[in-house]
Every structure is written in structure tokens, then in C-alpha cells.
Length: 206
Image: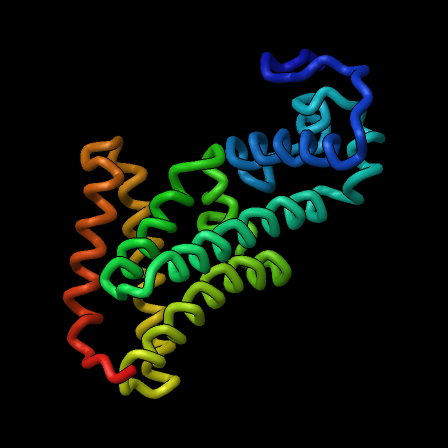
């Protein structure tokens, strides 16, 4: 096998957690480039600069490796949303911060968002559950704020939360494909204005 130009030299001993991080970084590169089905454990090991047995010491199979990587990024997305909502008590600024969290997520970490939002394994139950969790937890956090501050019922607030998350996700992914025709800050503000014009129509009661 011909070594890829991105392959790392072998032989360096690392602490277990550092090695795991190295393997996950290599796996992300390969999964993003090739998709799950075309990615090979041989290539991931080569990219990380380890032998295949070393890779299997940390991850039992390709799906286990993919799920471990997916967990990292799902947790990251949820954390970004939580921190955005907690960053201010001004709801207009909260809307912008929450939408900004999605724009920040899709524009960082080597297109890791593709593993969450564009996975070619969405029909596999453990993958689907993780992807849905990232959106559901974000929507639940937003809907809780809506319900606390308006007269909306729980079901109404949840539907609004799902709608805002869906808009933020789709617009952020579309923006990334536009080759920077709109700067990220301007794109975030544009979508936040749209969202705020809608959500601010619900009277604040809290």
C-alpha cells in the first residue's frame, strides 16, 4: 500500500487518551472526505500513523469509531446552543446567539458538521438517535425559554423551538456552500432578524 501524503509517521508512543484523540482526528478526516461506506479502517490507521491492531485496541469496529466521533460533535453542538442561550437574558440577543451557534458549528472543526447533519448512515438506528438528539435537545432548550416567557403551551413552544432549530441548521449549511458571498457575522444577523421578527410577535408574559 502506498502511504498517503497525510499519513503520520509510526512509532511514537502516546498516552491512551492522546492516542484516542489522534485516531478520532484521523477518522474524521477520512469520514468527511469519503463518507462512512467508502472509508476504510486501513486508511484511518495509516492516516493516524498507527498499525491496524492499535486502531482496533481503541475501537472495536468502524461503526464504533464513527459513533464515538459522532458523540463528540453532537455534544459540541448541544453545548454551543446551551451556552448561547445562557449568554444573555435579552431574548433578541439570545435568538442571535443561538443561530450563531449553528453558524459557528458548521464553520469549524474540519467540516465535522457533515457527520451530524449529512451522515450517509442516517437510516442506522444508533446514528439516527444521536443526530436526532442534537436537534431535539437544542429545540427543547429553546422551547423552554419560549414557554417561560410567553403564554404558549408546551406543545406550541416545542414546535416553535423545532422550527427555529431547523431554520438555523438549514440556513447555516446553505451559507457554508455559498463560498463566503455573505460574511458569517452578516449571515447570522440576517437570519436572526428573520427569526426575531417572528418570535417577538408572541407577547412576553414571564
